[in-house]
Length: 523
Image (tube, rainbow, N blue to C red; front, side):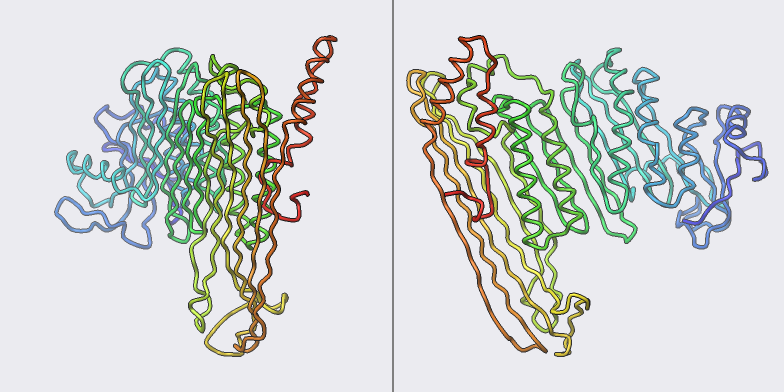
């Protein structure tokens, strides 16, 4: 979209471009009759905007913007400025926060505003304009929707829509009215909503969810955040975040690859202490880095994956525990757990066939990781098992000369490379059991295997084909260790001393948390 020189047009008043400022825009809007439409014009574009006029033919000449409602509020002024930008990030800059703040400021009353680009020769018949304004939302190139479920039972709904034909926003409250606290909560959420929107609109995209993932349960019980954006290269990028009190899911589909995550706290009963959860999260982040390096994965995409994992786990930092938190799973039964919500997550990149001479050689990266916790029996006779596992499948081409970029063609002289194929698996399992409230079982098992096949070619001739593998497995009975720690803890309490139980267990978590490197599974 070409840079534009703004001028204010109404059905009655015209201002030269040199005199237009946001203040002039306000004055012009105030001076016109209530039925007048205020529009911001621009210099003629290099290409036709492709909007049909009332006669059914494409218009030509100068382009102007017709506004759905005359407005002098912050939101409308923000839109007047944003619509002159050429990039999605610039058009959405500040717009999400302004929309959320204005919805809160007017007590939740419905908001609808749009700026429609039309040719100056196009008739401004109200019905036709209404249809075109509706199409701004229906056929937007970039769209963002945000829904909040409130504790009072109402639903807050926002929408932002962008295309070369204009810009539109909507906001409303359905199914009730917002309380004063909920309105205040919307205002406080505005910056986080805008930050998340800015992160998604930047290239490459980033995840900056902020307070969106830390909803105050006294005000909000869930949210849905969806975005469909077009990158500078014309590719589609989609994002979806959904959360309620105990579950949450995130999916990002970008040109570089896809990230998916789902979490379930089983009603909050799985959640351990902050130190316990942080140790588990830190261990997983280490595993993610190792997978990216071993499988030659996309570093920027793995950063997104890690950011999503870290931020979605931070939801539980201040999450309320259920009333029966210590009876469903007592403190002792949680000692060998991660303290995190159960989850499954994956990171995949599109398959690419970069070698025309050998199209069966595919460049790819596919990583999955999960945690599942199962429970049998009641509090007195409890059996608990937590399983963690990961799988990495990756393949890629590598130049024999690190200083020369690999460019494979049908010419055999270009065929100097190594082709890597990696297949790794890892798992861990912990079990703990009680009979008549007495600890009778505490075991941990770790297993990891790695395999890599490397074929080396010089001028298209196979020089070597080597496969290396490593594996390790270890099972441990931790019952005596836990019994000793628990006895020491009871003695400390009798003497009025502080408990060291969690710190003692914390120092040994490497014995049962997931470990993908066989060399790091101790004998």
